[in-house]
Length: 113
Image (cartoon, rainbow, N blue to C red; front, side):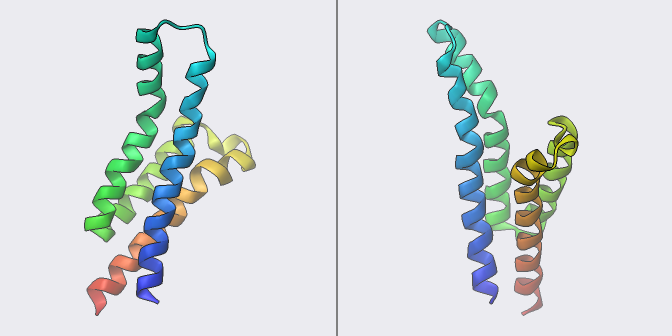
């Protein structure tokens, strides 16, 4: 069971990064020059970069990464105001909470064995 939780948490992290990266594609619909487009793309991808950094941390240190994912879920809830709409909360914040909990469970199981 430990291996299933371990790999499901990692799989969810990769899928989540891909999912939130899709939101950055809207910069190509605007009428920006190349410099503005690159800058806008970098800004739109910042949340994905943060999730990638936390994923790398969680991959190596599951307990610290799990705690970081939960803290990021709280930060996303406040910053992106996902608490205003349940659908936004479930799409943006809930996966971070689930990943955080799964990484914590995986870390506790690993340390307990």
